[in-house]
Length: 74
Image 1 (tube, rainbow, N blue to C red):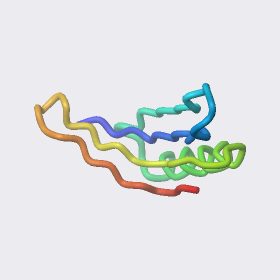
Image 2: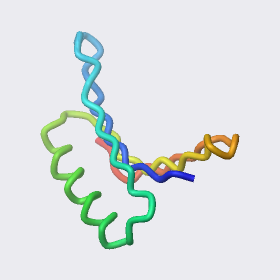
Image 3: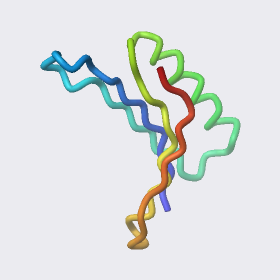
Image 4: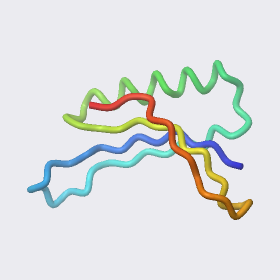
C-alpha cells in the first residue's frame, strides 16, 4: 500500500485550465511529518477558490481498490 496526500484545485466550469494537482507520497512518514505536510498543503490551497485536500490509500499493487479520506475542502 502507498499513502498519498493529494490537493486538487477545482477550476471554474468555464475555465480552460483543468486546475492544479499536487501529490505527495507520504508512505513511511511519521505522523508529525504528515501533519506538517498537510498544514503546508492547506496553506498552499488558500490561493484557490475551490479545492479538495485528501489522503489517498492506494492498494493498486495488491489488486484492491483505493480508499480516499477527505481532510479539507472549499
